[in-house]
Image 1 (tube, rainbow, N blue to C red):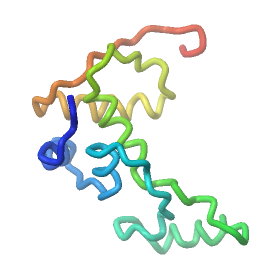
Image 2 (image 1 turned 180 degrees about the vertical axis):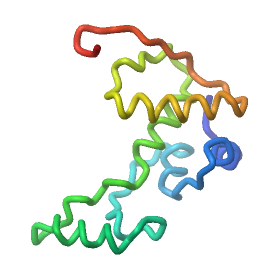
Image 3 (image 1 turned 90 degrees about the vertical axis):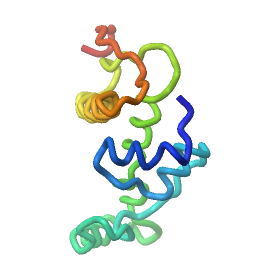
Image 4 (image 1 turned 45 degrees about the horizontal axis):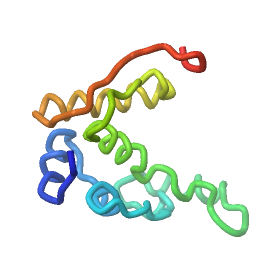
Length: 126
């Protein structure tokens, strides 16, 4: 399925979230993700994250830049709605598999045409 601007509110409703503008740009326009420091995102506990950022600052840049800004969420939405071969979720790391399947189920239950999934063992992934 091609993700359109009109589909975004339906996706947000199905997942019970509000996507960041850069997630929408990625999903709709295939724009690269912006590099954002999580302490600048007002949705989070910015005091705690700023402390993490200060602890992670190496004098040039925060090592947390690009973390906790929705890349995995957008990637999972895109993968769930992609018109392609069935996806083998066994190739995902365990935490990512559960995250993806949660998104996939919510989109499926909301009536979206989700990609077929399979659970095949591979040599490298048990």
